[in-house]
Image 1 (spheres, rainbow, N blue to C red):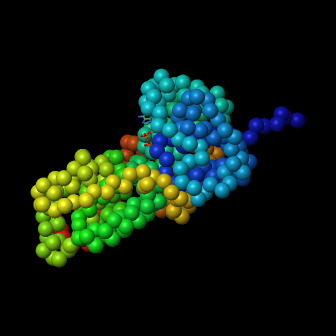
Image 2 (tube, rainbow, N blue to C red):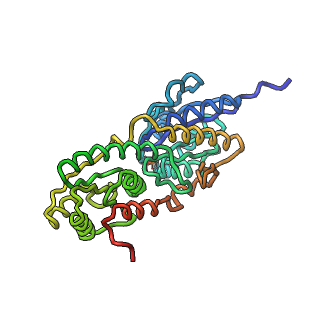
Image 3 (cartoon, rainbow, N blue to C red):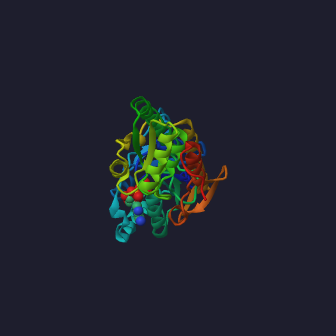
Length: 333
Ligand code: ADP
């Protein structure tokens, strides 16, 4: 009689900024692994927790009652020391000493880059799952958290619009997106904004001023400008410059952290659950240094390098349609 085999064991960590849907993903990792006869341990506090050797047991009951909660029960962290190769080497040793059969990293492009570096030095296989409200991870059309953030920001813009209309004012609303304007483009189209300004397609103050004047001539008494955080100076600078150029009073609303929290939308619960189960299946099928992506309506496995080496998706058609439907922009030449 052979000695009893240790069950297949998976470690899971959430890294980088939190977002809604992470808990649905962690729950799916734990429960799909257990349904498969495997076991799961959690690594709290992102890569910092991995370095510190922190672990927590995760069982069926530990992930009960969390699918509807924002944030991450594992907690997360930014740990910039992880960019140091010596630190990654040490983290790889820590990971191998956990004696698990695989690590699932749920993170944005920065965390998935860290996951790849880790996978190059550790014996333990590493699989990544994309998350970020900015939807700016390469190798996938969708990242967990995006849908909820769009809905939260659209609700906020709807509320601001009431005041904009009643007081006949121009509002510049800044939405998150440190480097990218995917969220802004989605919010702009969904909220019926007159102007959407993103780093991928910058507009000059003069172009915006002319569009607002065309609107005024057509009888438009209020306007919403959606500005991605990643545009230099954000909504504040744009408002100042527009006021200077046009004499309009432009009010500013910076939505900030409200966009990151709150109960996940049904889409983020569904996607989070599927991403989690796909990551477990990938490890069981001996994937190493791969990420789960969502492409053309199905889940795919890609090399982790795609997360930061491939251009992230951008909805150029949404941006163009938002401007076309605003009715104050000249037709493109
Ligand atoms: P996100 O994962 O949400 O994109 P960050 O870019 O802040 O968030 O990255 C989160 C963490 O991932 C960082 O604090 C760091 O620990 C790790 N990380 C980021 N970039 C790298 C990199 N180039 N190499 C290794 N680790 C990285």
